[in-house]
Length: 82
Length: 531
Image (cartoon, each protein chain N blue to C red):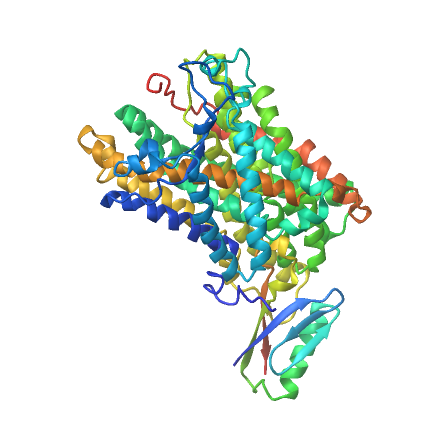
């Protein structure tokens, strides 16, 4: 199973969001735990299966003057085992 | 508004400047190829020539001819039409490039009103400085100054215009900040320089065609020199990567006691390719974006300082005209933004060519653009490697330093960080080489009419469009550079790390590496073939 989220840093927290959920945490470790908790609580991880969470960075949170030099911060994948 | 232009491999094609440099450069290159069908669609591109207020009788330099459409000289099918344009070519160029850049700005969802007015102001300021910079007192040298009735000239060639554009931009950026802020929507040095670099690909591909017009042997020499630069640039870049990054990382950690993530981001910013490396590394090591943003602000200002210092240093102190391609390659490895590097390379190209011509009383004349190409070639390789380097760093960071359960680094990161303008640069270069080696029969006499039609299209792009976009880059670099940023307290230690690493380590090592891989490469002498 696959799930897509948008990720950015709001100056204080790492935040992920899609049409169903918004989660935030101070560190990426804590954020990953939040995502895992959400997946398990909503039955989005099945026993014995792997759920892949693809996080696309929101480039609009990088100042526009920098985007002319570099237009990618990072995308990351989190795999949660059921 | 959310920007997910790197969600899929193709999703940024219409929304990123990098891609728009390709569309602009390759788009106009394709327009130039209509010459092969007998239709000249690019001869209107404007170009300046040296002038004086009172030209001597029978001499050159009337103000009325200070700008001309390049088709006047090079068009095969519409020379008469383009001859009549004169100064009007400035307006033609404005209208066509305004439409093209505004289409790009619209797709990139910029503020159109601000972009249009900003672009218009920057364009005409650029034309004004281009005009002033071509006064014969600034641009002529001792070989040709008499033609303009002068007994002394500064011998800066086109370099004088670049310096003027940078000065005008810096004055605006540092003393008229609200105005600079307004112009910033259109002051995009990286977009302009990437477009110019795509057209530099046209220049490289056209070089053998141009020299084949002088002699069959020179054409072959030029083709082989560009390949040598290609290979030497790659080798030098790999060596530089292996030496620069660990060196600056150690300086940051041991000498200045910076935290590991800051040292990694700063290490990439200073040692590899500036802002793009700082941002890529910040992302790779999962640093908060603010770290990359701070390093980027430093990189941009330091790059302009290098642009001001290095072309003169390399031309007049070392290695001078003895090893111009060593100087070019060292420039590519030392100056940390594409814009400042290519601009510095172009400036040095002008300085060196004028110096050698003056020093030898015209016995040695180098074709333009080869020194620029040597500066850009190493930079292009560095840019291409950054994606791979950031990917390796991300693997090290995610799987070793900060191992998180379940996190995986997608291979697509390499593509998202790949500099797309490089595709346009190589495409134009190899396309023209294919024409040269294929139907152009490597410059054989019977293929010259064909190569002449290729030339009619290529010259307005590699000469007119390229130089204009270089001028726009110089002007824009000045506008967005605020030296006061170096004084801002929060950078503190980072400013000093940058200073020590750049001048005490990066530049000296770059010179040594450039020497090892480029020493002895010769630029063809075309003195016997030009007027």
